[in-house]
Length: 138
Image (cartoon, rainbow, N blue to C red; front, side, top):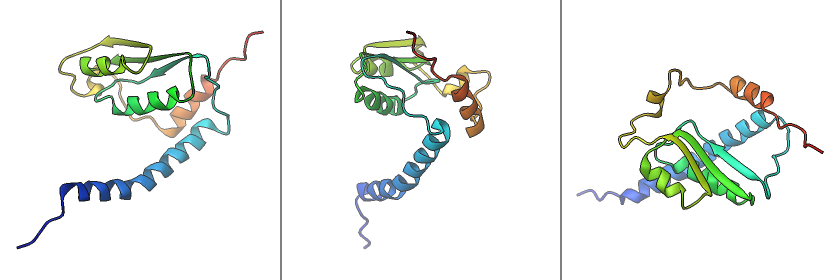
């Protein structure tokens, strides 16, 4: 009789195996997208964290917690579509939630768009350059 390891053993091994390559990809994108620009100062400011759509809320929750650690004055989460349970859970973590549609049966986020293609690094870089913060008003 073969004794199989507990299920969490596989999960733990998978997480350990996947962590390094994922962190490397995050760092590669950060370097490419930020192009040496320092992070925008958000202490004491209003910050709006936007997503193209929230399904489970896990990714947005990580982003919100990272932003919250940088001490914004007011934190807003905004998405065109998210399920009601995600919206309810965000209300506990942010100052305001903005959402256009809250379908009970969400399905795939891509269903709410005419064009939901995977953006290339070049597209992201171009958009970030076009959206550079304006100089502070005096």
